[in-house]
Image (tube, rainbow, N blue to C red):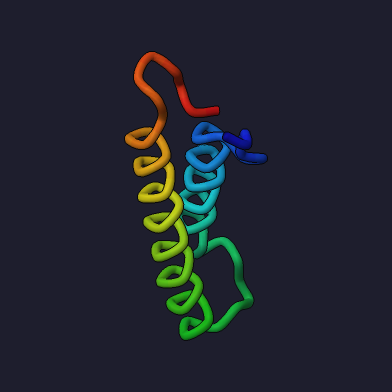
Length: 68
């Protein structure tokens, strides 16, 4: 089986960074409130998707082997 180019840890790290951007979105002025709201929604969706993929990669890893 081919080793993935991104590990579960990589995906979780990116998800964490997306959450960090969402956390400080109010500091991204002079962006409009509408743009910041859209950013928050998109970042949340992307974060959730990455965490789900990471979880599914962990579940599908062979027993006794961590998915990297």
